[in-house]
Image (cartoon, rainbow, N blue to C red):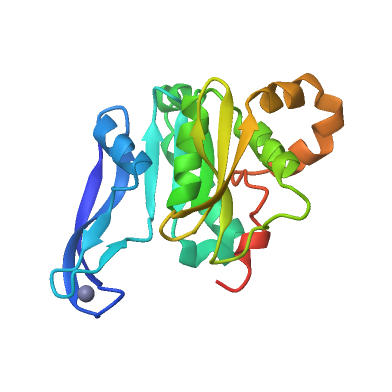
Length: 229
Ligand SMILES: [Zn+2]
């Protein structure tokens, strides 16, 4: 079930109080429209009736897609410095619902699910795109590190992060996006072959891959983006 709750939030521009339906959980199996709205950046976007400002609510919800095996604790950017604690909380919620502490029946469902933790919309979109394209997210993180040009941009807390923003049979599009709004800056087109190449040479990438794949937050930028937010 997808769950929302009524809440009042302050417009970030003029401070007016706005009544919104805040998402608590998304069930993508039953609501593919919500999955689509996340991907097209329209989900939980709000217009202020007083000043007209258009803003996006910092997310905090559980995203579940049984069909694709995704269970994602989605956390607000404001909590990013606490990523370890947030990951622990998501792990506990997963264990209670679908893991070690759940009923045998729920546990069987949980075995097909991959629990993850993300902060902000662009990171969530990336996980959904990668899974939809059958790309392992830890391999994707290694590919991002490999693709980052040495003299190019680098992740900057509160400013920009490197995310998968598009994928087809041939190409991965990696974009430098603004963390809050997901606005796309410079983009890198990377041959999808890079994913295959990395997986064909596990030994060469083993250490890096093991590092990014440790725990629920599979994101090579997790420490870099956690500074002073
Ligand atoms: Zn306003």
